[in-house]
Image 1 (cartoon, rainbow, N blue to C red):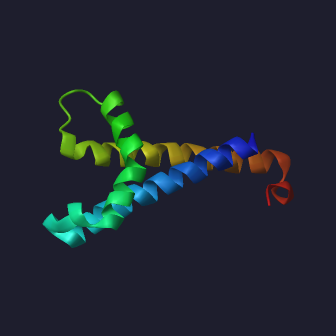
Image 2: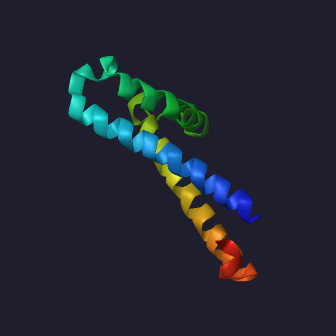
Length: 98
């Protein structure tokens, strides 16, 4: 169970960092962000999560807000995974969690 919690937490962290990096690079690059190869890579990493956000969000949510929805949902998943990992480590002993 510890491996599952750790894996979910790691995958969530990667997705969160990709979405945050995409946002930051979009702010810094402005209108030229679509031609930036790093922006395209970060967009590629975040695209599955944005599509999942479209699937779970109501139709009134605008397309430009979907990355924020994805980020917030992933943040909640990360918190749940972190709490689960701490709970499991406290049950089995901190020495076994290293």
